[in-house]
Image (tube, rainbow, N blue to C red; front, side, top):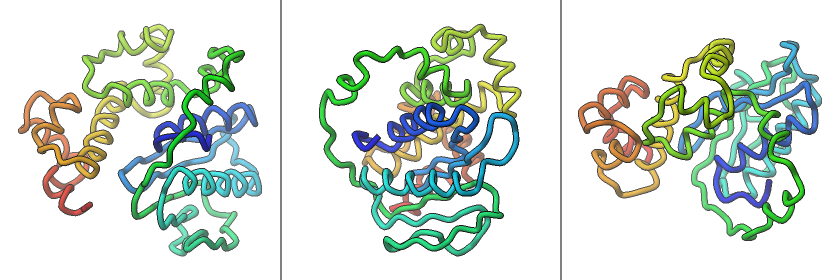
Length: 237
């Protein structure tokens, strides 16, 4: 996982490996922003993960986030207002709080990766078990983030995930979401990234993230974030 060039790549690998380490537990990205990510640690049977296992997974996440270049990282556990990690120091987490971690950083400065290392390590691995280890919603999210401006339909996405359209819709419904919501989330997340990491105009950002025109982009972005794209850029810079 340390050989990751972006936050999205790290999160994808982390989800794969969490599923491989413990078949009952998995990670869910509940929220994703340019300088923060909220991760929930869950069990497939609906029970709460063991608190010590959550503490371990949270600590491992800190190590990897700092390694890929997250500067001035802080971590909050559940609703506790006091960070459990800040300025390179840990404090005992409130293990009675929900298994929800809020990671925030001042800047992301990616480190160079070793080209070809992942391919070498996975050269004898079958991709099927890795794909099956992720929840359909996670697999869909990674698919949409790679091409947020694509002409996506639920039928096309289901085919790319080797699922039937009905199976994908049922799986998303079981997780309290829909294909349209996931597509909009992927597009808004990418728009946030482009607004903070590039000098593209707001109109260009809208087109690159799948919105038909600048007015449509502004309307949907404001509805999801509470501010216009221009206001968001000014606030985050």
